Length: 428
Image: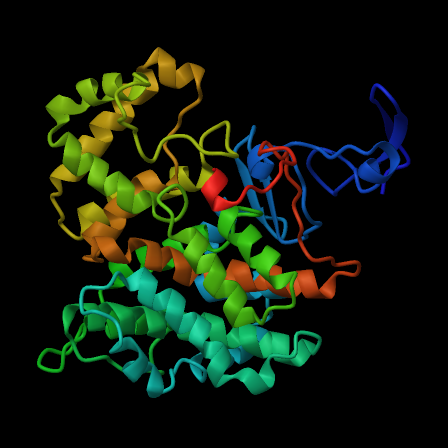
């Protein structure tokens, strides 16, 4: 807490409000006493300038294009780490020793199975249901299977829930996909590592054992690292808001999955691919860029710009290089990549995009990589959810460990009718 204060003057009152300082980033005006002192709320649509919590997990500097997990630059983690090590870092706050990493991997490995009843649960969905619908419901159902270990005040039970969610999310995701295409559900092979195990559950068929492609596994692990957390985004804030009510971790994370599903959030990489398909050929890119600048056209360039980053998305820099590497090593000749590269070239030279700092974000490239790895388009957001689970549950745990937690309760500016008298139906 800073010793500095700011003075806010309204027509009727003047109030001194303290500044809250973090270890990095801008200071925040503590407005907890504002309504009590002045009778006024603040108005901040989309919470663009509101800090709703204190967190020690992830830091973003949108102006400089910086992303840190627990203080570690995303560039270093992407180059040197693995997803499960990053998951441990997010949960525990420190990088693990070799012994701690072995124990963590062992815990994850031995919680990968899902209850057999989940198969019957999935059979209740229509065969062509979106995998995100099945994943959201399946994760919420975990609270029914583990209702006797959902004491939010017990640190051991909180940790167990984290292990279960990180371990089972790939199993549930792969099962949802295979059910949607009529394939038999595969059990997790615990002699495989995290990403390899997921790829096996996704793609192996009984008649043709799957040989894991090392390039595909490495690329997927990297994408999981880049998507593992991103501060107080819409889905993470949803997990925290639901968690603030005392809801169990499975229900809270299921709510996060629902929030992630939106095309403005986790569904953006799927929307990028649809947009590239709509553009059709590199020759149509310039026309598409002009349409995007016309506010009346109804056409948007998906995968450009970011709510927080006012510079290049640091994850996009990493994933752009990986995108080219994957396509080269896998021998993929994808016409959509030609469109994407042309689009990037044209947009970044256009004065409108330069002025508005509309740089390619992580979604611009991730969809192309998923497509190269033969991940179906409807599974793109599911992949995001697998990775983001590590961040969601880390925030849920942090929320319960920090003192002074309160139930989330945003206020509003009411613009409806003023008090009026009820009239009987025959008099209306």
